[in-house]
Image (cartoon, rainbow, N blue to C red):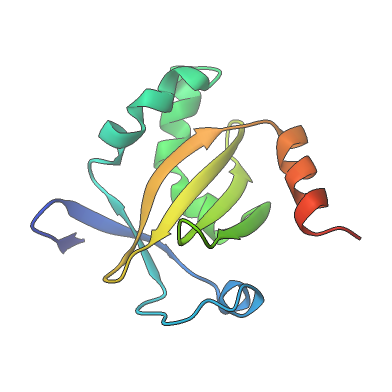
Length: 126
């Protein structure tokens, strides 16, 4: 865990080299992704969007698994973030901000597999 003036954080993963190359992400400062110990405060507004509170907490506790083994990843150039889509109890999107100093999980929220597949077909048509 690292200590920042604002919060304590823990490492939850790395940005894979394949993702860096695929999206041609420039100026990589670190491949490490951290999660604030207070992430639940920022994501609490999405808790009621989950099928249950257990599903929300299960996602919060398993963000590292979504990042290490995503169903799909996209780069949001406008927001300078990566969106990791995966499934724990249900399908979710974990947003990782690519800040100038560090890369951190900024939020996560549920969405359907159908929406993810639709997004994939738009972004990566075959």
